[in-house]
Structure formats: C-alpha cells, structure tokens
Image 1 (cartoon, one colour):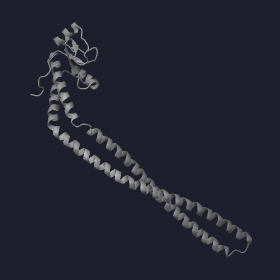
Image 2 (spheres, one colour):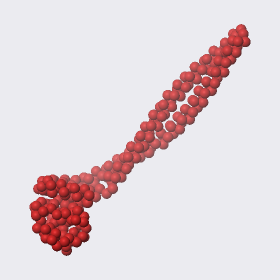
Image 3 (cartoon, one colour):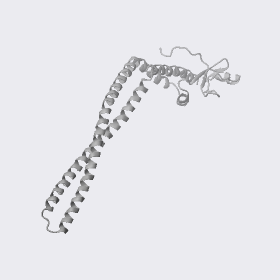
Length: 241
C-alpha cells in the first residue's frame, strides 16, 4: 500500500500541473462558448424570420391572384347589367357585385397586412445579418486566441498526460478509484499530509493513534473531516524526471 500512496502523491502533482496549464487559457473557452451560444440562438431567429418572410410572400401572391380573379368577375357582372331584361335579374347581379366587392375589400386588407409584414421582416432580417457577421468574426478571433494558447502548452500538457497514464498504471484499481472519486468533489487536492498533528487539507486535528497509522502507510486512511487521503511523505520532489 505504501507504494500506491507514494504514487498518489506524484499523481496529484501531475494533476495540479495540468490544472495550472489549463488555467493559462483563462476564460477563453467560456467566452467562446458564450459567443457560439449567442450566434446559435440568433441564427435560429434569423431562420424563423426567413421562413415567415417566405410564407408572407407566398400568401401575398395567392391573395393577389384571388384579387385579380375577383376583379375579372366584377367586370363580368357589370357588363351583364347592361343585358338584363328584368328587375329580378338586375337584383341578382347586383347582389353578386356586392358580394364580390366585399371579397375584394377583404382581400385588399389582407394584402396590405402582408405587405406591412413583409417590410417589417425584411428590415428585421437586414438588421440581424451584420450582427451574425460580427459574431462569426468574434468566434474566429477567439478560436485563434485559444489555439495559440493551446499550442503554447501543447508539449507540456502531452508530457504530463503521458506521465499521468504511467502513474495510474502503477496504482491498484481500488485505490485509484478512491482517488478519482475524491478528486471529483475536491479537485486536485486529494492527498493530504499530516503536519503537526493536523490534516494539511482541512487543518483538523488527527488523533495520535490515527497519526501513527498514517505514518505506517500500510492502509488507505481518509481524513474523518474532509475525506482526503492522508499520507506521511514529504512533498516537494520533482514529479517529472
């Protein structure tokens, strides 16, 4: 078990080094993700506006065809008025003319509404396009910045990642499982020395008997207060040869 605990100390150092290298990216990944999400949302709105515009143009075209048809009917009925031979025929055609006029009026109102909607949508789409271009440019810029920072630490990261794989292979599965489980909750501060009778991680006092057990390093002992793995080994030696 002592060898396993010794390896965990080195493993924690590697994880802390990787964390520091990751920190060099700053909040660029978060900034990039935020811009991408904003562009995705705006792109969806843009697409919806385009669909609405297409639908409005289609409905306007249909209404214009209907209006032309009504106009033709109106012309036909007016011509028929000159050929009527009775009041009954005159009244019937007059009713048809009134009906067509009402339909024409309603259709003209619909066309006017669709024209207004078309103009509004065209303006909204026009305003969205430069914003989408600006977001695309911002994404490109952030990606370049992030790529530059990643490249600057690429070799170091790869070396530490390889070292991590090597160290993990030296630890028995059950111990490595405990390390990773604690790491999920506490970050890269899993292994803690007992210094001056206290846990280095949480500063809680450790009973003398427990301190002796930790010094023996023949079993996995967790701090009763913070849950860290306690060891008795000086830290500070270089991790990478």
